[in-house]
Length: 138
Image (tube, rainbow, N blue to C red):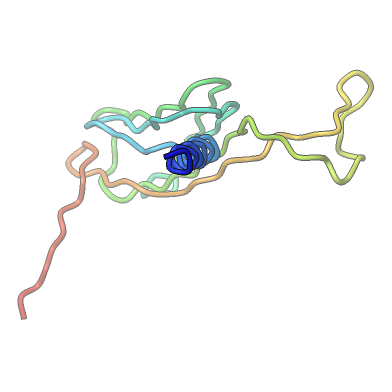
């Protein structure tokens, strides 16, 4: 019985540690006219860069919380929009090149570990959609 309790406690600690390690795992969400991210735990200083089908680039920055991209109403182009999300995590690593550690009172020996994600979404008839899977019969 004592060994079973130790095993269960060890398993629970492993699961909690794994959950904490993967806390910074945003999930893309959208409605008909906006894209944002949920599960925004442990991230800050985010930049969401969205490229429209015609090549126009929009950059949204958020010091805390998720950046939100909103379509521009009737002017929204149909097609595939590509995005790039960057942010700083709570995790820090030692700065290897001390030249890049800041100056004076701003000097630090650690830096935030970056988070990076890319993806896309589709706009059809002026709204964000989930594309249907088209299967050919053969």
